[in-house]
Image (tube, rainbow, N blue to C red; front, side, top):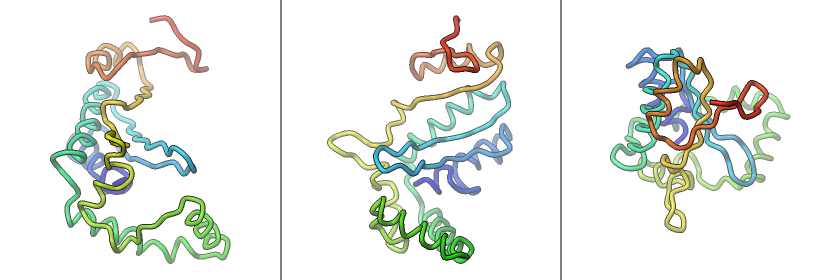
Length: 176
């Protein structure tokens, strides 16, 4: 899921914001390795005047992935190739091999790369429904937006993605 949405150069978010719209030099997503709740981050440095439209496009990519535009066979094949063909370079030292084995044990990875399909990528534990709720819910995202407030604030507020809090460079609440 991460590779398809933003974790690879050929991902949907990067192709959308960089190649199609030319609003960014590069946009990506990453899943932070933690043992409990694992944050899924989308990072997209964009032109200031394209901040709100970029946020809308990222949300659209998430929504479509979870509903109408599942992973394709080609996207899954590309992700599998990327995951397996980079292993030799990744395992050049005994320490690197040990680190990956430790991660396998720690995070209890169970799905061999070769068994991933378009439908399983969308129904992975990140996107599937659990107890009636999807683990990736595009209507419950936390957006952290950095930029020239005078240029971006009105359009970001107009998106109505949730409450807007303004903080200064030290993280202290700032007056509107």
